Structures are given as C-alpha cells and as structure tokens.
Length: 182
Image (tube, rainbow, N blue to C red):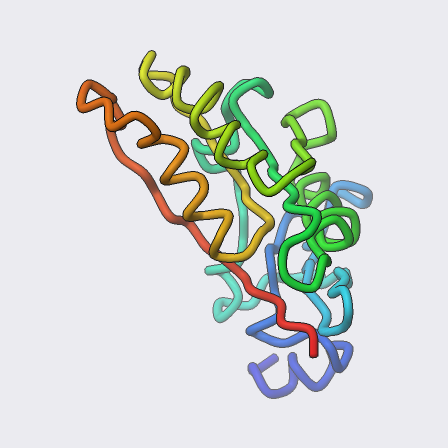
C-alpha cells in the first residue's frame, strides 16, 4: 500500500501532523495502534489500529520509553496551570496527555501532578523541590501545561536567589504545543 492509499483508508482527522505516537497493539499482540490528536476545544485523542507499520510512519513508532520518562515517579512532574490562557490545561491533561501517557505505559502512579493554586505556584515549586533535587544532581522531568509565563516561572524559580553553585547539568526542551482557543 502506498502512502496515498494509506491516508485515504484512515479516519479524516488522522494525518501525519496529528499523530502523537504509534505503539505495538497490546490487546491483540499484533499490529499497531496509531494515537492522534484531534482538533477541537479541548483537543482529544483518536486511536486507529493498523496491521503493518508503513515505512513512512516509522518515525512515530515508540518501541520503548525515552530515558526522561523512565525516571522514578517522584522525579516526573506534570504541572497544570489552571488559569493559564484559555484555562484549558486541565482538560488537555484529562483528555489528551493522561490517555497518551497511559498508552505508552505510564499510569497515574508513574508521575506526580501539581495543579496551580495561585500565580506563584510554578515559581515556588521550581524554586523549592525542583531546584533542591536538581542541585543534588537528580534527573527530573517536568511536563508543563501552561503558557509561556509558566516557562518563565520555572526559569525564575530555578534561578531564584542567583546561586551560582547550582548544578544544572543540562536542560532539554523536548516539545511544546500551544492551543489557541478563539
């Protein structure tokens, strides 16, 4: 099957740009599950099963978790900025991120969720627990569901007192998706 035939057989909302991840189908132990994000407010995920993985989709295939998602649960944080932007972060977590994490093998015991309580929550978290463990050399992952202000709060919190002794080995900016709701 060529690429054009493949896409014509897929649901309308699934395309190259909408694919989040492809995994082995665990229920039938054969074939592959395509997980895609649909447009909408908030966006949702859609799954399709295919029997063979075409070469042009191999880049979406997740054979195993990347190192930043294989950390202990106390070192993986999901921050939900409840009042950010169009206030869709909690819905995006519930309808998109949480199901996708489950699909790749991370259930709700595999990470910690922090919902913001004020405009200072992110900065306080970054300047406290996150910074303390980073200075101890502990690898951590933060998935931030927020606007650009949340990212600024993370950086400001980590650099809170200007401590030049901080031992941040490196930071990896993996991906960010911004959902604008008009």
